[in-house]
Image (cartoon, rainbow, N blue to C red; front, side):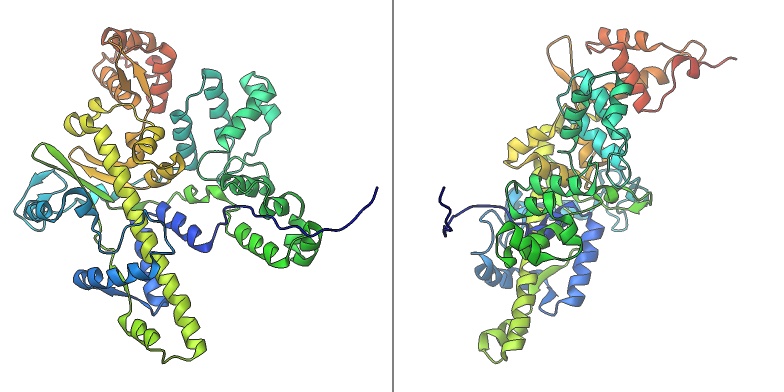
Length: 482
């Protein structure tokens, strides 16, 4: 058999996680306070970036758009776009301004007192844990009772860093199911947000993140599968020789890997209490609900006219021009990433308001079943993007302040063929228990029968699960002797 060497050109497409893409994803997941800190830091470190008045932002934003139009997705908003104008147009907004100037966000009523702002108590929240975030995603999926049970056991064995710290065999014994069932369920949990969660090793954690970006068969995957020791020793030339690729391709892959998170659960590991303010305000104007982004504290950003003119005039030397060019591109991407973040939050919030109008009218009893896929299909985005947007983002509504994730919940069927949200059913269970005779508390079976009489088809074990989720004791624990 003859052996020979050949040169062959091959065109392939692959997604490379550039620093700009990493920045856009990070900004999307940030809270408003975190975003304000990032903007403040960038203003201090980047001389090209500066704060301007609204009028200057609109004018100069149009120039900026021309500069970066070819580099950014068509879907990105221009700097001259106002998210409020997307909703209603300038004429209607001017009418709303006088209405909202005296709006009391705490009570949901008009007030003439300028000091009557959002109450301080509504700015307090308990940060969601990794367990809460994963359990919520599990509830949003369509799983059998057995898969749900296995999933809850698996999530309970994921540590604060996001790693699965038990074994497939142990979980199989506890849940009394075959090991392949546990393995399959773990693979599904590994598709949850944050990317990389549920891994059993650092290598698996990084591979999950690479494959979530559709990097199967890429240099990145090859390095993670076979050359992690060489990466640790920085023997990049050896990796390039073994893979028979150019060294620059290996270095590019290393930069992508460096952007992965080796501890994906740490975002949820802090027990600190954070002060928050709403990302979105929902106001009722006439018969309609108006969605407004809260942009207070987010300065209008622009490129410095001084540096723009200096660069255009060609008066800089090569080194200064290179420095200004790098800083200008960083500033452009930050501005566009913030705009894309705000636009995405706005679209998700608007879709939620459309689906949950009954909640805005009647409160928790009007909350309808809603899953990530519903909103994703409504606005043409991926479910993982909706999950990122709804994490640690809050909406001030006429019914109070709620995290966006609150509006997503599974549903139960009713005897008249309709469906009712799990949160609404939990609220009904709580109301029934609150009104029971403390000396003769109701059993879970009796509560299930009462709900069935009220058209909600629910099993006793489901009542038990919901009661335990609300941390309400059993009938024997609730019994009071007088």
